[in-house]
Amino acid sequence: MAVQSSQIKEHMDVISSDGKKVGAVDHLEGMSDIKLTKNDAPDGKHHLIPMAWVDHVDQHVHLNRAANDVTKQWKAA
Image (cartoon, rainbow, N blue to C red):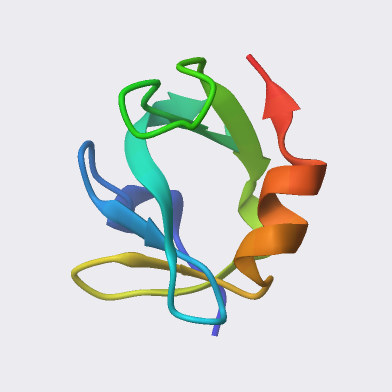
């Protein structure tokens, strides 16, 4: 089942496939990226992750990548 961007809300925690919090949603950037808050980032900057990395959404946004891969591959915003 495809994830709908409307399911993703501001301040939802973003959880990697290995169960680690990698950030919180700041807002959606267009239809293809999620911008994470800079408060939770190790470098204090905003980062973008693609919607393609989202596995499912419940009270959190769950990714299909491990935390290490997320932080290596996210884009600076």
